[in-house]
Image (tube, rainbow, N blue to C red):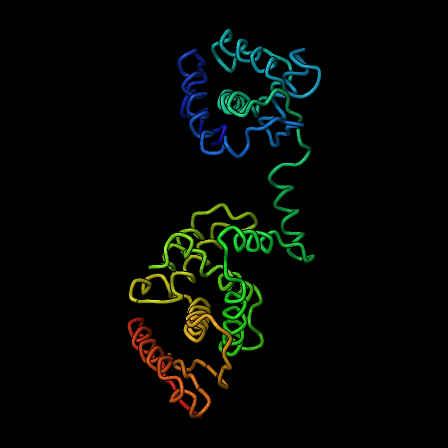
Length: 330
């Protein structure tokens, strides 16, 4: 919600009244309604992180509102003090740092609402905050403890992904991408392709029809720990491009690396559309002068006319983006 944005919205001049404080608390309570069922519990211990929690804990302890941390009683006492002062600049309590003054009222309203809505009675302060979490995440990425890998596994379980199909598509897409980009392929792009291959069917949990659109929406908007919004947007774009018309993506699918990943994913989905283990033909693909050239083992297409028909349709789709595709046997 943001203590700064709440302070600017409800206490723009620093003045605190019963009305604007109640409005801020209610607004925070409304936001919390979406998570109450997941987090309302018999708390063993509750921890709060970052500046607002630390500031209010310090104020509570230094002014004798609590012996340690933040309690519901200490918040009630601080609430009374805020209303009595009527202005954050006139609060006059120990522990108020000048750099936290302007955001204090908004931060208090959010924290007070959290205590009320989630039935928290006592909160300790965590030593770490956002920057420590980011560093921990980045450290894990380089030491085989990437939070994104765990998130992908959790999504596969949550959306009941057909793991065998996901692995089939992932392996073939990876093989094709390395042919297109070369052995010097940027591992981050190959990793992105692996993740979207494993998650490309999560939209089926919403509806089979147009499932790639549902997948793209989920990947763009879901909470995906470890992934940045930019990474989620890329996953979403690749998921949307996995099948169907490419015309809708002509203004989005422009980056050359994403185009290579998209065609690799589309071909993998196309070859495994019957969702079973098949003996793949010898298959090579490369890109030169705005043309994709796919070379398939001689005679294989005549034995698999449905795949041949699907590949001919694929040629038309890439033409809509101004790219050419040629399917050869050899």
